[in-house]
Length: 136
Image 1 (cartoon, rainbow, N blue to C red):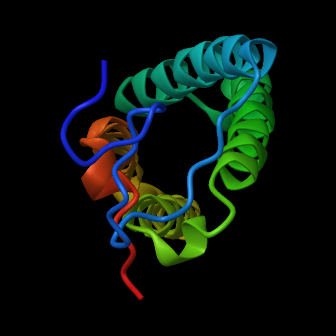
Image 2: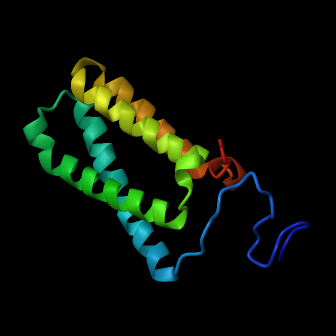
């Protein structure tokens, strides 16, 4: 079912949204599985930071989170080639900046990791017209 002003794919012709490609079903399923691994790693890392765990104790979780984060980044940038111009792309860059600051200033890590998680949720789950809104 399409809405007024949309095509068969359900996308509107609104130029304020960036280009969005349809992805094959296997890529969508793979993305969901990678995203699940990424969220598990994030949860363990934030929980460990709150519990003041030492980094070696969670090293493999950092590796899982980093690897799946890079896979998600590659998937999202392939699906949305002009993401660097969109709100979702800038929310990803903001999140990465927060992680960098948290690495340099460990005393702020818990707060910054929580802000990064909220930024991730908003960047991934806001309505499409907001996520893919072109900033320039």
